[in-house]
Image 1 (spheres, one colour):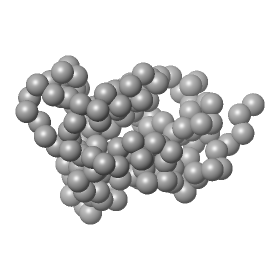
Image 2 (cartoon, one colour):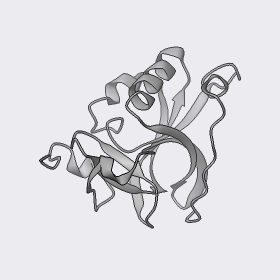
Image 3 (cartoon, rainbow, N blue to C red):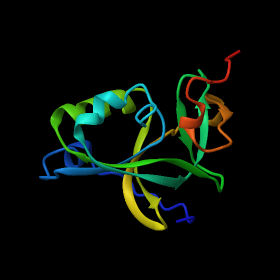
Image 4 (tube, rainbow, N blue to C red):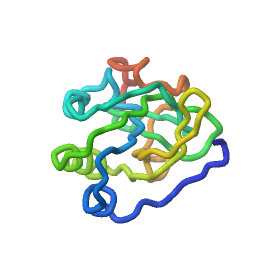
Length: 151
């Protein structure tokens, strides 16, 4: 898991429909977690969930409003691996909410209870100048409501 393996995604039409895919593994670590403000939008589609982690560094966006997963480092970012039932409304929401705000969708190895599998993870592809303070604990949920002040 620590080898930094990444897999480029096929075009969105192949991932989010058109393939007959009925379930999606999605690692969430920010506003889509149980403590996040967007969770209610995906709640109806959750089939299962488990505590999980991914090899990435977790930072605040420079706005201080949301977290971003940034490549590099040897830390674990902790979140939840969701198994979601694929629906057009869900896929439209994810594409609009995540990629519109600059996240990059990637298939990454995610670890649950020592077992590794690939899941869709929204990562921050922009330079470090767009990030704010590092979330040292690697756990966004522990910091909900106490985002750092932005200067």
